[in-house]
Image (cartoon, rainbow, N blue to C red; front, side, top):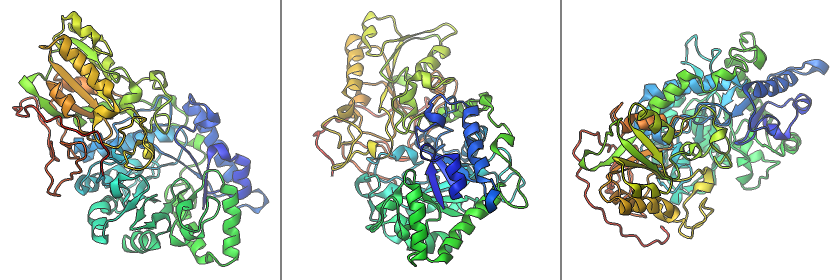
Length: 603
């Protein structure tokens, strides 16, 4: 029932304490080596596995399972394919694509010797100030429901089929149960004030397809429901999830999430176990938690029947996954298909799926004068700090937790948007990179492509909150106005517009959420919401240069003011409503937008 972090436990301790699971956090690698290969991951997986199955001294020898946040590909691992973050996949509105992404991700996890991914995230995001907005497919439950079961099928294999937990499949996690995307003011780990009906109709819809598809684990959420922390919410974890939804897998806690339950601490929490958390993610103080839980059982604070239920659920999942029991199909990690094969990471067929996903996720918001598509023979100025930045286009949860402290070199095999543009014009056109746009004054260009947007963040570090920890150091980190976060983006657009007033500007906007960008829209002839496309920047160029038509449609309403909170069917009027997305054949009627803003915090 205890899950420890790989940097804080040894194989010998796994053997000694009969530990059930390990995980690696974002930015944690075998031996602390960021450049660890598939073989390095496999070797550590073997060490943990072999320790766990040691039956000497009368031990049961039950295999551990190793979980990882492979949330947009096997994103912690060097060389892996990085698919667009979920917000972009929502704009693609293609369930079949999602199943193929799930399958490709599972295969790349298998190559590293791991058993389990903490994905998919099924949050229905209701306030874009939330720092995890990009982890959600949509503000509306419709797409979340359509996707959840298909992603689970891709990761695990189809329920009741011979392929279920086959050699290229791993265990999926539906997360975070429940309401993480609906906290008040978008406060990460905050309070969701929804009624039970709203929880079901808005925030529960992903589970309505994920559980029937066979999701074997569900992760408890950090947030509270009307003041009660989910890690201690027995009515929902047991009464609803396990009893009403008939979920017979196991509930995994989030990173020390149990310690937020009143009366609990990092090293002890009877309340979470009693509420229905079956496996506790206690990365650091796992040994103390182990000892304290035994004491709590012996002291009557936790009933033995609850322990038996939790252990039964964990063993059931291990048996179903082929790790345990008479139908064991998977031995040590090194004995499995594709074990340690570096070529599986970033395989050509996976990168092609990712490139397809990029193409389908792009949403055209403006196309004045039919600037797009561009000709492959065009002379193009490419500007903006994100044009040749794979970290910026990958976003958070990319090699590290926050997606920071990395460079292009940390993503071997990946293609920046600029490199993709270079390839697109290689048959007779020209692409010149000028990050600040100063080269526009030299003339001799047919168009400028300016790639701007947010820089990487994850979880609470990305919150835009009236009170809270924002990932941005500016004094205005409480508003949806992008220019107050990144004035350099507005500056590069103005530089180009001043230097070459007649030069068409195509803005490619990278972001983990819709933002108030009226100023940037007014300076642009064409404007593309590209979200966080991942490792395959060439997919952006494919659409800009007409190799494929724009297909993306907004799965989030786009705000027309700095504090606007608007979602589908709530009566608000967005600048670009849910479902909006032009093709290059559509007539653009946007016109000049108001640039009014106060620069003050939003309530």
